[in-house]
Image: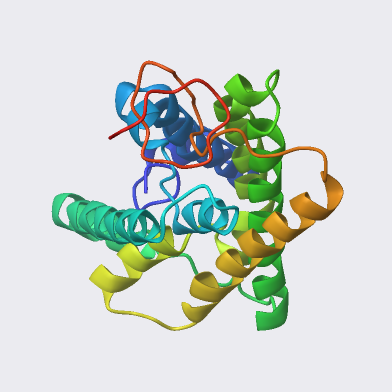
Length: 234
């Protein structure tokens, strides 16, 4: 909304839509990375995305009931955020469709679906690569910031760069518009599961060390099969 909404002061300064997309990605991805290194993120693992929770569950790092609890929390959080956007900014929010992710004009549905699948695949695979390495693990938040920024920059014109069913669900719910939203509920989870399979095939000698994006042994963990020092519940 700040970069592309009606009356945007950023648009009056930065005329290039491509540069504003890059700024969008830096802010969007950067906020997630900051949450990951915050005390709340170090406690929960800062998944923020049902696809990431699904991937860790598929890799036997989460209990099934925790996976469902995380996914429901992520959906509720996204819906509340979208509702806050609509209530606070009304017309300005409406000018950007309340933040909905939608297929870009001129792109066939199969291409949009493939873009979301491949982008989510790359994100989850890179996270698994980083959290399976003792030397790279602590750099995971920085990596996700850079990667998601790039994906937003190149992928937003095609699909909106959702990567996240919750992120798409919240704005769609408050707008009560679900046209083409099935793409964002199917393609990203499929990409996440394919990334898990690919990681197991490629890295047979490596294993995911933690389900947290920013690990700290000083914060308790609900996750199982963790291979880094960490205080555990129970």
